[in-house]
Image (tube, rainbow, N blue to C red; front, side):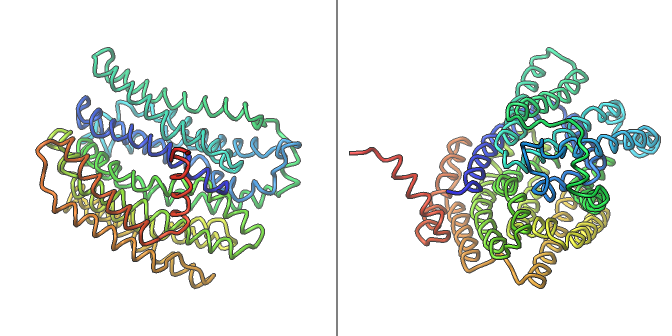
Amino acid sequence: MGKLQREGIWNTFISYAGIGVGYVNTVLLFPNFLEEEEVGLTRLLISLALMYAQFSALGFNSMSARYFPYFRDKTKAHNGFLFLLLLIPIFGFAVITALFLLTKPLVVEAYQDSSQLLLDFYYYIIPLAFFTLLLNLLTSYLRSLYKTIVSSFVQDFLLKVLTSVLILVYSLGWMSFHQFVMFYIGIHSVVLLVLVLYTMWLQQLFLKPSWAALRVMPLRELLHYGFFTFLGTISTTIITTIDQFMIGSYSLSDNGVYTTAFFMTTAIMIPAKSVLKIAYPQVADYWKDKDMEGISKLYKQITLVNLILGLLLSIGIWANIDNLFSFMPEPYRAGKYVVLFMSVARLVDLATGINGIILATSDKYRWDLVFNVVLAVLTVWTNYYFIPIYGINGAAFASMLSYASINLARLFFLQFLYGMQPFALSSLLIAVIASAALGASYLLPYLGNVYLDMLVRSAMITTIYGSLTIGLKVFPEMNAWFLVNLKRLMPRK
């Protein structure tokens, strides 16, 4: 098993453990111990901090994956790469902070009637954004070193466990909501500290400035690439957050319902996120070596793996959708079709594989910017049109429509440029298997107990889906891996 597969499997395991904790937080703790408006606030704070951090980074997150192979030399402290990676974004953070303070009157005007609670915590966004920025940069650096497991652990698992503990403490009445938000921001500094200590343990925390960085790669080229990826990153951030901003301007309570339903679909993307953490630098190395065959093979493999796991998760979520909402207060049921539309949007994203990464790390990276800008414009327009008419369902439908349109366009563009596309007959076969498994679950009547029904229904879907996938040899490499591990588990005679 290669390094990519090992890292991907560990990242997937950690991510699923984290998604389990995340579901406890989202389905059980947040809705039952916080008001809908308070839930909406916590989610909006995270989204605002993410956008703040992305503006500050000036595209240097992506720069790490593309250019680190040229700097890599541990004996020379990687030629001062980490210092350069942090320096420009910190300068960007100072500029964005000044703009953030100057534009507060505009934010007050937009949110004072519908979301006063956000204005009460306006300045808390600054430290949260700073922790998010450093966490993203350090994660990007570790990913370039092919060290992704610990960063996955702290972000996908540890952060959620600490959040669970915080909500439980809050539920006991030991702190006010104001103190809860302070600690909620504080735990982001804890996970950042863990990554810093891990990087030190690896003996890779090289913060000393070095002119060697400018000899390896001209600063002008780095800034030029950073500028284009910055525009692309901002477009991506707008795509992933504009719905929350627009819903939040109407009602923080609606944002609480929407983001809760939205989160319920994040499990679908876990396989992709886990593999892409290590695939990004792998694709960059393939481009450096001009290995088109390697890129094409990776493109097909990752797409099929993502579809196999993503379809299983999506049909599992939809088959249990009423069971999941039964754990939450009644108003949250308004998010049912948000789950449906966002599930389809995420499956389209999975089905198009790593086309965005292939473009972003190629010499055609400017085209990735074009696609992201078009997608951002399309997302803003569709949200602007559908949210006033259909509310949170309109926001989810807008996302589905936008993602489907742009991902298909990007897929055809890659096929035109490089003659590569990610699909095969096995892609259609796994879709048929998923439909059969979901259809079979509808034949099972409700069993009278929510826990029993979820257990039996999920087991039924997994058994049918897994048996057909392995039996029909949809992905032979997965069959081989399954047999090897089955032999390990069997007792030796």
